[in-house]
Length: 139
Image (cartoon, rainbow, N blue to C red):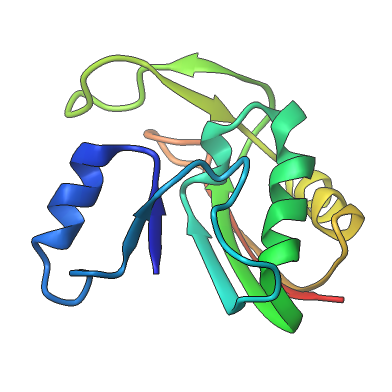
C-alpha cells in the first residue's frame, strides 16, 4: 500500500501495474489506516521532508499502524540542521530537509516505541551529506 499527499504522484503510481489500486492519498502526520493493520512500513527518503518537531508524532503514527514486532525501514539525509534547500538541478523549487546524525535518529526511533535493529550511515560526497538507513521493530 502506497501513501502520498500529492494527487499527481498517486496518479503516476497508479499507471504502474504493481501499484494500481494500492495507493492512498493521505498525510504521514495522520495516517489514514486502522491501528495494527500492517506488518511493515517503508519510509525511504520521506521523513526528512518533515520538520524535526513533527518526527515524534509521525513515528508514533507508524507505531500505531504496525502490528507488534512489525518492521520499520527508513532512510534520511545525514547531517545537521533543517530548512529549505535546492537539492538538485532536476528539481523545480525548494524542498524542506531535516538532517540527522545516526545517534539522534536512533533516539527518536527508540522514544517512539521501537527497538533499533540496524543503522547504516553513509559517507558524504560532493552532492550530499550522506544518508542514514535504519531498521527497527515495534515493541
